[in-house]
Image (cartoon, one colour):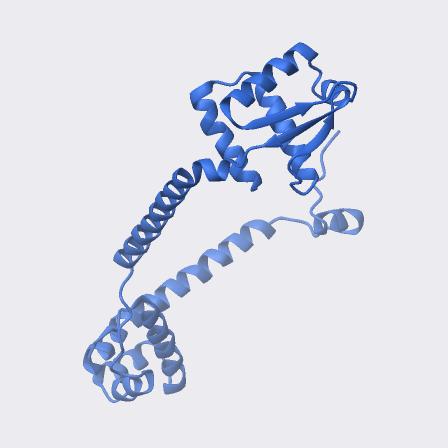
Length: 241
């Protein structure tokens, strides 16, 4: 028997028979006893221990045993003069096999459908990666021979080595975005011509902001010494009492 299958089968029967709290406690108690014996079924259980463990009366036990037996999920046999009762749990997997299989297949199909839908959405939001016609070396070799290269070199005072470094940054970032897919060598060179001034301006702005922020932190501030410096280094905030 399978522990999970027994639990699922019990709750399916509960929907039909509306077991009370004692019925439920008794079934799961016996299920755990059977599981602890590695599914030796039938098995024996001392009645006095069962009553003490569940804290129920003998009359409540007898009513619940009869109810579970009538439903077909429990058999029991007692012998006069002995404290142990023999119990046998029905294999609910055999009873509900068709229902479990249908339910699990439906869940698998729903999960697969959800995964496929998510993948379709991801593909829809992403640019398809296509083969790039022109390599970085070829594109830069073409670019350095253009008039635009001379304009940007004079404007920003860049030699060919510096220009090549910026061109590689441009090329790699555009490749990652898929922006150079199927672009001609002329289009790549023209795109770089418009990209470089924006890139340099953005870098300059970042440096300026960092300088102002650093100045704001240190202006009119005395250097920390001794214990104060150690506490500051450790991230400890000093408070006035």
